[in-house]
Length: 325
Ligand code: FAQ
Image (cartoon, rainbow, N blue to C red; front, side):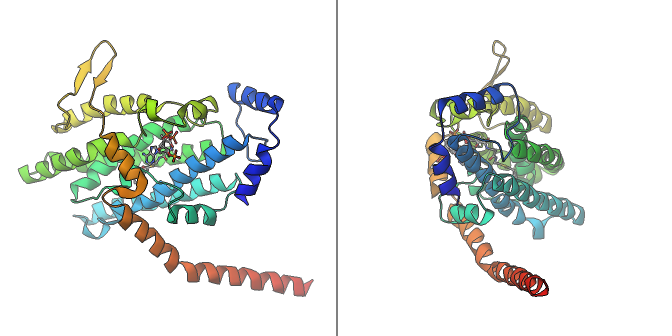
């Protein structure tokens, strides 16, 4: 269905329609699902929103890993609420993508057979309780840095979903920082765990913003269409500038010996992540890719009886309604 729609749109793309569409974008208008849009715009949005939705869903796994082992009842309740929020974010985003003519089942199948991606960060393991702090602080922190500008993105349903998501993400970031604060001010062993979590998750967090601008295949067109509001490097720089003072406040050391305040540019100079590692991770060869996809495949298979039951129920109701008419 989705493939046919994109193909039929591509044949209608005359230069006048494209120019009128770009003028609407340039004027800051929101594009709504029933409006005409270029096939490439629709395709890029389905890729980005679908990938974003999958990230929220797969992103439950590294933290879900610690729900049964949270150190106190209060921490457990907070973590549970946070992980449930991520499921909700996935649902808003799947709904936003569905308005573009792709079904949630189609997107799920594309995730499960590797045609669609999810964020690289969720292919790293969460080894200690301190990782729950570092994920909230760094991963949700990076997610917010990327998502706040997306509240102004040109596609209406995506922009509206982002407004709600950002409100919840800021609670996530704060709860993560609160865990880090407790650990950093705790025993020497707890502080060492916090430092170790920062050491392992710092560079993977920087990778969340995508490859450097020179290697970003989609940025130029996505920014012209206001699907993206900033380049990958701009947001990465803002994240570093915001996060380094937070690490200092915790008394922790960012694992980058080259880190240096550059007064001239008004930001930190910092080391690039290992981009070879990034490309390995996004092509399926990260530390947890196999485990994450196996968990999603199992959830999909285990849920088949529910989907079948719901469909059978809907079919019965429909037949009863027809019989009564
Ligand atoms: N991981 O040309 P670009 C969260 C791919 S939400 C995997 O620069 P683009 C909340 C990209 O798809 C985190 N793949 O791409 C949470 C493309 O591949 P293709 C998710 C990546 O799209 C917290 C290729 O590389 N957030 O964490 C990544 O213009 C805690 C070339 O890259 C979003 O998705 C990556 N990191 O820019 C949940 C935000 N980066 O299609 C649970 C929305 C790039 O050519 C727990 N997305 N690739 O094969 C975006 O803003 C953009 O899609 C970017 C990438 C910035 C991620």
